[in-house]
Every structure is written in C-alpha cells, then in structure tokens.
Amino acid sequence: MQATVFNIAGDEVEKIELDDAIFGITPNTALVHQAVLRQQANARQGTHDTKTRAEVRGGGRKPWRQKGTGRARQGSTRSPQWRHGGVVFGPHPRSYDQDMPRKMRRLAIRSVLSSKAADGRIVVVDSFEELEPRTKAMIEVMNKLNIGENTALIMTAEPLANLELASANLPGVKTIDAAFLSIVDMLKHSYLVMPRAALDVIDGILGSNGGRRKLSLRDFNGTKSIEVITPTTTRPKAIAAEPDLDTEDEEAAAEAEPVLEADAVDETDEVEAELEPDVDAEEAEDELEDEAEDEAGIPDEDVTEVDDEDLPVTEAEDTTKGGKA
Image (cartoon, rainbow, N blue to C red; front, side):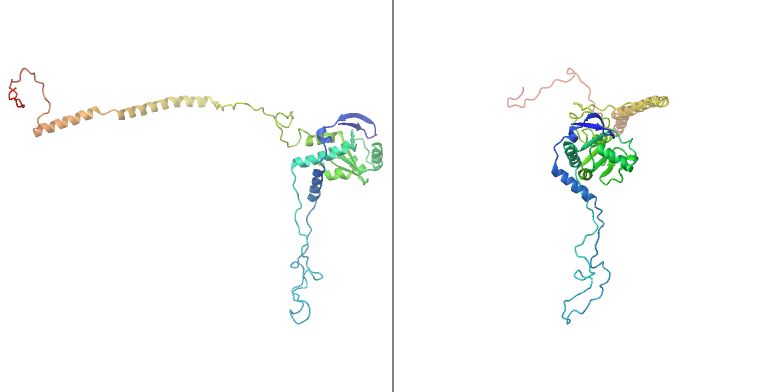
C-alpha cells in the first residue's frame, strides 16, 4: 500500500510503501470491540466504596420496643430501609483489569490502522520540527493537510515541545507517543497524523520482525535484534578442552607423575607377594613334623623301590575249586 508524504506546508514530498501486514489486512471488528472494552476497563481506578449498616455511624440503640407499639419491629435506625442507613449491595474497591493475549491486542491495532488506511484517514508528514509554537500555525497546518476542523490524533516518535504548545488549545487535536498505540484514541479521532519517524516505531512493534514473536527459521528473514542459529542434523559431541597449564603447573605435574608410577609398582608387588605361597614357611613346618615323628618312634612312610629279581619265588594258592595253580 502506497502513502503520500507531505510537509507542513501541504506540499507533496514523496511516496512511500506501507507494510501490508500492518496497514492492509482485513479488519476484525469483534476483536477491536474486545480490545476497546479491555482498555476502558483497565482505565478504571476501582476506588468506589459504599458503607454497609455496620460501617454507618449511629444506630446502636433499638428505636422502640419489640412489641406493643403497633409498628413494625426495628433493630437499628441504620438499616437499609431507613434514611441515612447503610447500602446493601453497593460497590466496594476492586480491580477491573482484564487480560488479553499479545497477538490479539496487536491484531486489533492492525485492524484499526488498516481500516483508517483504507478510508484514507492516515496522513504522513515529513516532520514537525519547523512548526512554530502557536495555535494559529497549527490551524494553518491542519487546513493545508485537508483535515480542517475534524479531530486528529498526532502520533510522534519523540516528544516535540513546539507541537504540544501549538496543539494544546485545539480541542479536536491530541498528541501521543507512537509507542503507546492507544486503540481507543485512534477510534475517537477521525484522522491519524504520523511523521516518518513514527512509522519506523510502529513497524518495529507490529512488523514481521518486531516485538516478541515466535517465527520459524524458514519464514524468518533476519534482523539485528535476533540471532538465528542454524539447526544441525547430527548433534556434535562435546569435547573437553584441555586447560592451558603454566610453567609452574607443568613442573608440578612432571614431578608428580613418577611418584604416582612408583606407588603403583609397590602396590602391584605387594599384591603379587600376597598371592604367592610362602615356600620357606612350608619347609620349616615339614622339618618340625619330622622331628616330632622321630622322637615318637613313628617309622617313615617312604617306601623304597625293590627289584622283582630279589623277591623269593612262592607258589600262589589258587582260590578256585581246582586246587593249585
């Protein structure tokens, strides 16, 4: 969508292209209505308060006795049916705040801006810096911009003292900061007057790359405020970086290494010694056993080898029924 940029003298300066995502969408009237109700409710202070019969001063005595007067029974002159009595269901301090998702709020603002742009009610001005701080000068600018006596909301990127002084006495002209984007003020006024700097502020809030929006990496074109990280198919393995050692640390590490190796060797030798049987101890035990057997007269169990030729030849008895073999 194109828009014409004017100066305060009413002359055409240039033509610019407005973002269709902000000024060219189909308005959502139901969402705009909800946003207006929310803003009006949040503007309420909620400090109203009425007194109940317990809070009103007086009425501590029973006005007349319970029976015998012919009148209705009464307990206090501060009951709700009495004059100067308490209020039954009156308002008390409370909060009227309403919440609304950020996307819905911004869509409502885009709807209002798109509706104003479609009706030709958005006027883009080059700058108000040359404006004199006089009401007469502001009236001339409004006439030259073809606004006349219609109401106008001037949205500036930063406060301008001359503009505020020039428009202070005009009941139909109001100046606000463009970062506020008050949807009620935009609907109350017929025209929206914006300097070029205000368009940059609005684009930074409602644009495709502005605000706190969740965009996929495919649809994201890049911006200065967001850093895009390209996803990888395989997750890289974490490699522990070796710390840089100073010369003193290296010398200490070199001295500690041989000590550790010697300790390891001593430990292995002790383990092997524990596992191997003690041969000297076994031999000493055998000698003690032999001396004890000699003293007791127990013969040795060792058997010497004898040749078969030295043995006498005897007839072996046949255990069978046949007799001698």
